Structures are given as C-alpha cells and as structure tokens.
Length: 316
Image (cartoon, rainbow, N blue to C red; front, top):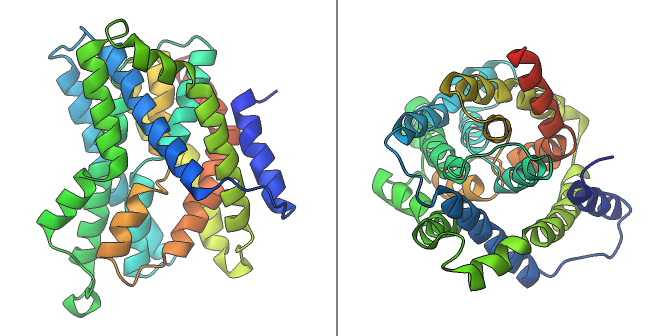
C-alpha cells in the first residue's frame, strides 16, 4: 500500500481527471504552502540544534556543486535529443536542476515513517540546489542566445536578489534559523504545533497538487512525445548524482534517499517565477507540463521507493 499521504495526491489526481468540482481556494492553498515551507525549515533547524560542525562544509559544497553541474549536463541533451529551442532548453535546465519542495516534503515524511536516519541539514539542500540551478539555467540562455533574442533578460544583481528573496527561500532559511536558535524545547508552544500538524498540512497540499497535475495532464499532445519521454526517464537518471554524492560523503540512509529525490525532482514554484522574468520567449506551459504534470507524480508515486531500492542495490 502507498503511504497514506500519497493517497491524498491520488485522490486529487482522480478528482481532477473526472472533472469534479472539488477545489481548494487559492487563499487556503497559499496558507498551506507557507506553513509547509516554514515547517520544513523549522524541522531542519531543530534537528541541527547544537550540532553545527565544520565537517558540514564539505557536504554543503558538494551539494551546491550538484546545483551547478546538473543544468550543464542537461543542456546538450535538451537541445539535441529533445530538440528544444535555446530558450526552452535553458528553462528546462533551470527547472530540472532546481528542486521541488513538495517532493522533498513527501520524501521527508516517507523516511520518517520508516524510521530511516536523516540529518537536519537536508532542509538546506533545497536552497543549495535551487539557487545555483536557476542561476546556471539563466546563464546558459545568455551564453548561447544572441542579444536580439534576450529582450526580457534581467541583470545579474536583480536576478540574485529576486531568487534570494523568493518567499519559499525566505521561509525555509528563516525556519532553519529559528529552529537552530530555539531547538525542540524552547519554542515548543509554536514549533510543536507546526511539526505535529506537518502530515496534515502535507496531505492537503498534495490534494491540491493532484488537482493541478490532472489539469496540466489534460494539455498533453502527441507532438510533445519527446518532452514526455524526458520527464519520465530523467528522474531515475538524475537520482544517480544524488545517490553517488551521498554515498561518497557517507551520509545516513534517509539523507541519501532525500538527496537523490531532490536531484531527481523539478521545480514548479521558484524556477517558473525566475524564468518568466528572465527568459521572455520560454514556453512556461511546456516545462510545467513536464515538471508538475509528469515528473512530480512520478516521484511521489514511484520515485522515492525506487531511489531507496537503488541505494540498497548500489550499497550491496
């Protein structure tokens, strides 16, 4: 049986496919998103409470390097195999090099439900992978497109500022700092309420994601078969850098599974915002079809279990 949290995603997916009038109001969804990001940050910060060491620096640098490397590896594949134009190839690089906070939350709940050891710094992976990937994707666009094709390109400093001040990043980093300062006991009247409600918040969030994914999938057309194949085939392949990096660093089993899930995921929140402003001629609908309509359901329904099995097989 799938994890009960995943069943809420399936419920939304089925309801959306049947064109049900089930809907979560946008204001409620926004609140769920904010609570989810903040709670993820708090959980990570509390797990790190009193455990910060210089040895974490190697881990931070290795994960950050993945954020730069993955988009660079994806670009030639997207250009010459998937046959996307430069703007769309760069957009896909930014999205697939970046990460999905929703997928992370499911992976975190999955490892916790199975009692797998997970380190507190996994929350930092979200930021460490997301920021370099978005910057690299936009750099690829500026590097390979002509100046005439870049009417919507923004300057580097505003781009950094916009990415760093994204609400997801603010809540994640802020939550980590608060959890790191107060730990489990000192702020229990607030942190206890949020962390105990984490599963419920995630379940309702996934219900909405199921509805959105169903709507996105209705736009699939046969002419997009290369994009569909990419969105289905890349998650297992992209999990390998996460698995190999985690094993090389000697991380805990749960931490490696989460890192692999993150490298296998694709952004559908932060990256679209940055790309829409910086790459005016990119087809955002096409990359959302791939990331939210195909890759997200794959990871939630199949991927996390698959990456745990791959880790077990690779570990011997």
